[in-house]
Structures are given as C-alpha cells and as structure tokens.
Length: 401
Ligand SMILES: *Cc1c(COP(=O)(O)O)cnc(C)c1O
Figure 1 (cartoon, rainbow, N blue to C red):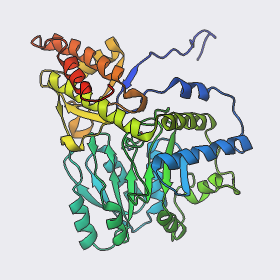
Figure 2 (spheres, rainbow, N blue to C red):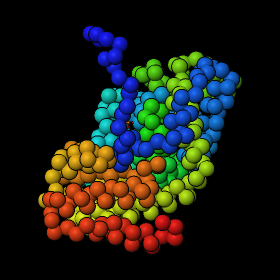
Figure 3 (tube, helix red, strand yellow):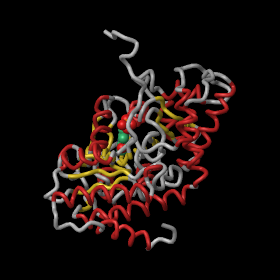
Figure 4 (spheres, protein in one colour):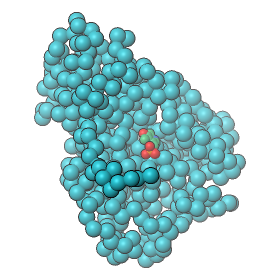
C-alpha cells in the first residue's frame, strides 16, 4: 500500500535516442500539442480536427477513399480491423509469411474463421509475386491477398508492383500492412489498387503509439456492406466506426482519444510541411549512410540490398560481438535504443530504425560513434573513426548531407 504522499516521485524518464523498431522520436511540437486542453469528442471544434486528420491521412496514403480513419489503438488494432471486417468464416486468404507480422495476420485470419493459404519463405526474404499469381490462377476462389509492405522483423521491403490489378482480376482484395512504410517510403493506395491499408502512429509518422491510420477502397466497402454475418468485433466494426467519421452522421460509437488525435494531426502537419518526396529522400540518404558505417564495423545486411527498407535496417552481428551485452551498453552507457532479433533471428541480428524524426544525420553519427567505442573494446583491431568515415563518404554522394 502507498504509505506516504512522497512515495511516488515526479515522472522523469531518461532521454533516449530511439533507433529501434518503434516507437520513434517525437517532435516537441507533437508533445506540446498533447498537453493542450481537451474538448468533447462531439464538439464541433473536434469534428473539424477530425476532418483535417482525414484530409491529411488521405494525402499521406495517396488516396481518395472516403473510408479513411484513425483506429483507436495501435497498429495491431488496425490490422485486426482490416481482417475482422473483410474476412468471414470460410473465406480463403493468401498471406505472405516471412516474419512476425505476416504470421500475425495469418493468426487473425484463422481467428476470423478464414482459411490461410500461406506463402512461407525464409525470414529476410521477400514474398515472390509469381507465387501469388500462381495461387490466384490455380487455387480456386481467394477472398483476399494480405502482404506486409515493410516487414519490421526482418527489414524486408516487399514489392507490390502490379499486384492490385492481378488480385482484382481474380476477385480478390489486396490488404497491405504499411505500418513501417507509411511516411518513410512511398505508399500509393489508389495507384497500386490497394483495398485495405493500415499503419500506426509510432513508426514513420513519429507520434506516440495509440492511433492507427486505416483506409478502405470502395471495393472493400462493398465487401463490408455485403457481409453474411456481422463483424465479430463490436469495437472495430467499420460500419459502426465509420458513422462517427462521416459528415452529417457523427454517431457516438466510442470516445475518440482526444489528445492522441491532437498529436496525430500535428505529426501529419509536420510531414506535410516537409513534403513526401523530401521525406522519402531523407530516409533513403540516412539509411544508406548508416549501412555504410555498419558494414565498415563488420555488420552485414540481412535482406537482399534492393529490398532493404530505408526505415528499418536489419543487420547480422559480427561473430565477435555479443548481442545482449552490446545492446545493454548502448542503452545504459549511451542512452541509445536499437532492436534485437525476433523468432529465428533472435540473438543474431539488430533492427535499427531510422523512422520519421529518428532519421537524421545526428542519429547516424551518434549511433556509429557509440558502436565504434563498443566494438573497439571487444575487437581492438578496430580503428576508431572507420565507420564514421564510411558514412560521411556515403553522405558526400548526396547533394545535401
Ligand atoms: C509494429 C508493427 C505492427 C503492430 O503494431 P503495434 O503498434 O505494435 O500494434 C504491425 N505490422 C508491422 C509491420 C509493424 O511493424
């Protein structure tokens, strides 16, 4: 039991440089906006904020989709929203499984009563699109194809080229997980004919975790409207949630997370000020410099170079470096967070996120400088400055480092 009013001190979390798989660094403007006064979730002032969020979300998803919202919850809530709304018992769903998040989608499909037609490839490899084409052509009716655009557990950047029209030719929906791609690399929902696409606030949008952008195409909305059974989740039922987001309806469903909505609006406004092209170029530049520095230290890229994400660099450790010790030194001595490996990659790789506000020249230099210190202790043959030099050389290839 609390015994004195002095037991609980003022909260004073350490200042970390967040270079893991999320959450990423948050701009002070976003943090500041979260401490502004609340209004009610049906207040006209708040509804106007929601309209702006919707407008900015359509812009960042590159879509005109009417049903474009922020789900109350994290990325997994948006993933679940896509699956439980679009998949009914008996539906067959092709799922690309090459890491944690493809596996998670498959679990959600199964829980929705659907049957998973899994395409399993080794972690670190992309899903071959010709295999999807083959299944669509030969395996009978498929309700949807679900792929992870940016597999955060392996750093694989999945190609989605021509996939949308192919799915539609066979009567299937295309569901895309863009949690670690939206705001970091191009995501073009309309041009790529994606039917359901979702993300999360705490990765490349650089907002605290708590909301999850989601957009449904007209085709997906038609599937939703023609369901035989009601969606098993009341909370995530898009037919109900959408009414709150629709001008003229605004029916109470659940209380919108007001402060998080403020934060998302500000984070999107920052992205809008930067511009998408400039933002993508920044992510590309910093990740290339980081990789050059890491390779100089003996780390090796896990995915094929052409399909390695600029937002998350997954590298295997040099054999002389111990995963747990080195990550703990980074955290405690240098206050830098990077991610360890998951599943079959546990203990063998690091996942370094350069997402949104974390993708800066300063982040790259700070991390490499700290790693040089750590590596030179373990492997004294390492000369200090090597990886910084390699990264700077990479930067010099770009016009504006
Ligand atoms: C982080 C992540 C999720 C899940 O998001 P949470 O916010 O942790 O629920 C889903 N898919 C991918 C690709 C992710 O990186």
